[in-house]
Image (cartoon, rainbow, N blue to C red; front, side, top):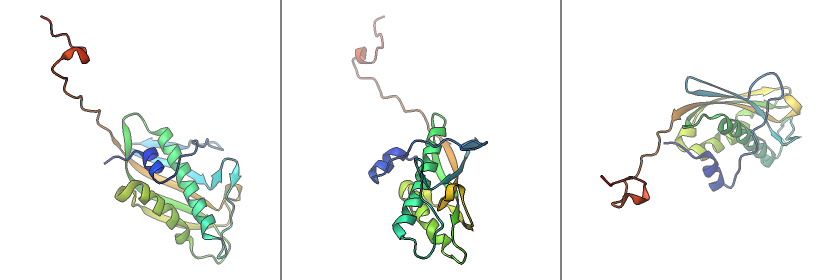
Length: 176
């Protein structure tokens, strides 16, 4: 089953941002042997950072916003990189780096927000393996950075519809 990412996001009341450009000497995504590797996406909206570090007093809506922002940025890179006639088959792996204060131990709960959104978008194909790592800092002091690994599939071309009895509509010449 293939998912229309932008259509599914619209159903969820979400939209993809413009695909961010790399801010260094790397590419945003690499596709190799049917696997897409999406470079780390920090919790950034335009030029504004959803900043860390996270602690036990960080409001849940800030964590949710950071996680959703990272996922949407990663998906925008994925959509911009997908070759024609290719679609997401499955989210394989989600890696998260959580900018947290020393002693913070709920990294997995921060990442649950990103995992939930991927499941909401892709259904069972959005269930993935994952790691959540606490770090002392991230680029721009972002609260969160994620990486995605996605397997892709080829989308078969549409099956042509049968032509009606009168071939004038499809342009077939029936004269001998």
